[in-house]
Image (cartoon, rainbow, N blue to C red):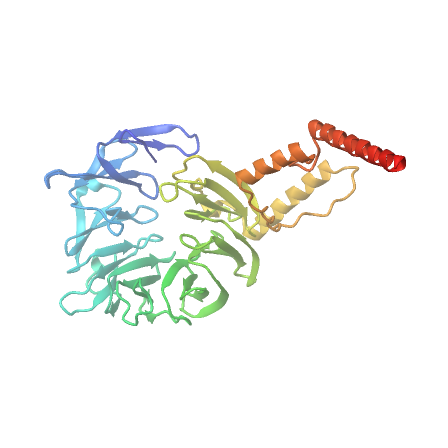
Length: 462
């Protein structure tokens, strides 16, 4: 999906790179593709409630299949219609209820409704789409709560799990792959301990079978910077605490299994194969990155990607890309691609870069990360042998070469002064004498010899 300047949205086949559909949608504010690419969802500026400004389009036919009015849009409420990964289940948040649809045929309208008084945010589990989480904020002295329901109509009489908490302004809901566990980051605007200007945050964990409902045991006080499930859904990683932040890997029973290094970190990126993990510090941090092998419990390498805005692993798990994009940063826009151990492989600068993403591919198409690394290494060795036949062996370069020490800054007037000095006194700003300087030097030497000879003659005459 490509959003263009003239309110046109183009849909392209990522294999052939050909445009297969173009939608002309005036005053479009946001757009989103469904997981399997069957639908395009758009949000337009609306002037009257009669104008249905949220439209679901069929990409195959180009026709709208569902329309509704939505007063405003926030990060928590967009996309308005949520899909499971296989597009078998679809739902949307409405006033005091969650509405479910037949994702194969939206012409049937709402299939059933789940009433949740005061609901303000929902998150549908995606692989599979079997459960939905609903957040109800604090109201009239009642605590806020997160509740888990089954998506099937006959199983929605009671929540499968529930967690209540006070001092809650917003929440982030994270389902795992497999739809068995839900992580809830609870954020409050005010920190009653006065330790943080940005409020306080807590991390809760709920399971759909009711086996665990409670706080995640963190060993350090401070904010929750990031939390991410692995692609297998069997473990999750958390980076938390006041700087230098700590990072811990937990299993799905909420037991810590590995402590990672502390440092200036606020971002976690799991490798699609689950074996590797990147711990990074972006945003207002200097961009340090540490690459970890979670299976062997060792650090593979460290590097730095300053001013990065986005970051993501490739689908095969061998490469890690960072990008500096506008409008977040208007200068030094670039894309960098690193090897799985942190060594820089590629960098390209742009005058203006708005977005950078990997082409979507299923990680299941590729082999295990250890086999891929071995095959890539064998290709490099063969290339080296073919290029180096008959030549002496060279010492291999380090994967992470040390950064060169920058030269001392010299202001422009100092450089000009050096050039003038070279002309007048027989030197050169680059360390070599010019023709004029050499000529002047010879003249001065002759004058000195002449004066010395005259002085010697005068002293002999006396």
